[in-house]
Length: 325
Image (cartoon, rainbow, N blue to C red; front, side, top):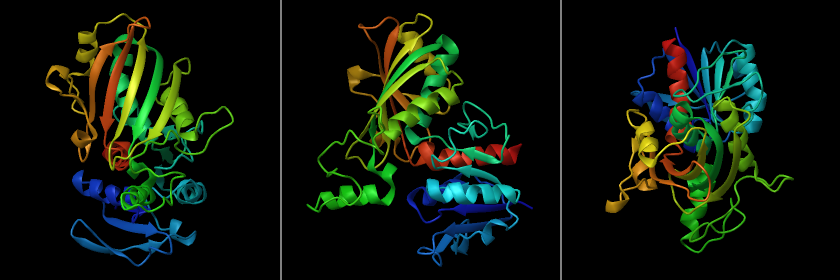
């Protein structure tokens, strides 16, 4: 008997997790939905069954769960994930709380597998996930020396607050989530600023890329930007390869993967856009061209749905891998 818990079930990512559980046909015998006290009591339909959302408490972690998927923020995860783990569950957490712990697996199923030194598995940052999915074929075929990221991140990455700021900003209302209006604006600021001048989001991408690709020598830098787009993140990657390559060879590296869509026909204005990726499970790549200013360096434009592959979908793919094994 497989018993599953979903923590943060009423949030933006939590709702997508439930959708992905249905789409992937995840097999379970019982599922329990948890949220904060404020959202408890809500009714949610899942696989034809009406479920009542329960308040998450310390006592509820001792419920005989086999698997727990969480998307409820770092502080909630810090407290509750070890409690679920203590009572025997494998926890897949969508927050940033556990990602860089040495004994915690940071997993993108197309790239790596959990070792389960501990029974907590971290889901990477949304922009990191789509980026490393695109980088992995290049790493395997040519090797990687350096990656420079510039991200263009949708407001849904900030949850309901970011969505509200964009929608209310169009009506002339002041933001409540961002420090400045996002409607008709661009914010070069995601998460808090660190002492080195980078934001925490940028540092996440740098550190997580090295961990997932298992290459501490890889040179990575990033600038993360919030844009007035509802869904799907875009990432401009400037990539220096170990081995020499042509543009066509770089394109060829992306072909043949079901989880990657090559959309690179600039003569006909065909390139990945957020509208292409929204609601789709794949990672889209295009605008591939050689950088004439650096040796053996290429530009790659990468777009993916941040709520799907960047969050809920990746989490459920990890869950599916564990159940299948």
